[in-house]
Image 1 (cartoon, each protein chain N blue to C red):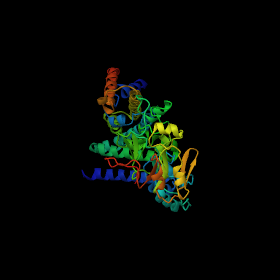
Image 2: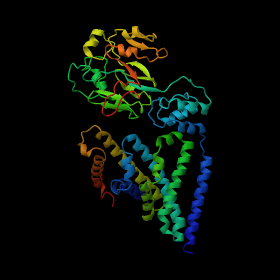
Image 3: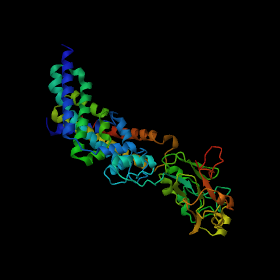
Length: 281
Length: 194
């Protein structure tokens, strides 16, 4: 008897509560789109915000509602895009490639000179505010690693000795956070494949570039003239490389007098570090 | 029973016996949810909601079922069950009826399920042999005290972010020190209600 009463009571209570909860959950059921959960499972789940929405669940809602395209997640790459497009039955641009970030500057400490000693806040944006800043080159990397701090995937390391950030391509997802952060627009997103890249963003005159950096582009156009495929052009002070024409012969890299052309993925530009860290795959 | 008595219960619950700063119950949401004022206000609202409902529900169950049957020893088990069910119900109702409030409360609502402050209030309401009106006033007082303590610490923590704290005190050590100082300040209420 002593055991019976509490057992019955608790049992009845549990039953009442259970029925109540079941009834309530039906009565107050909120209809949700089942696609949202499926889409969220496909998305990477890094909540990096690269798509412009607050986190993956927000993007999943938008994609399921048709307010965002299936390839809105730059991090996911073609695999995620294809899965989402087949889930929703929507076409995506099949030529779109996954992208990786690359640092378009080789101005490490011995290469690019300094005009002053900077003692301010160790922050690229703060240093950039100071006119031409402490480096001779007005376009080059300041090396305080704002991009490293902002990277949500730990795909960047700051090489203190060289004063340049290093991008680990195995980890880089091409979310573009570093591109946004860099006050000098030195980081660019490129299709993740073997290619030749001009690793200099300077628009200064050849004379100024020669004085400021050993590896700056001096607009000599030797690469343009030497390219057998005619893939290179000098446009608006920058070398443009037509990736469809380029057959990766590497002649331009050999001819470049300042070594500002870099072979990404084959001869990484910022390798040869004992930490085993390099730019290209 | 008059209004003065109820006022006394209210003041002593909110300030003299402040659930956090005098009784040291419910420290986990207090520390965890006080990083900014907006969040702590949301938490305070959610706790108020659940605390009042839970103490009414447990009071009814206790006085009409458990005491007559002599099953007082089932107190903890049943009270926890009631609180958990209440939180679930509340969540379902809010989700349907007031989705904005549901979004604002976010994860605090389910967190309350295992909040010791709520359980403590349901116990005290029973232990003090209050009647139903007194229990309601008492639980409102306690939850107000909880919210006030939470808001006070949240305000302090927002200021702390801009002050120079020695490195070995940064983070939770400083929060606990602030809490101690707040508790000392609240000792001033002792003896206010006889």
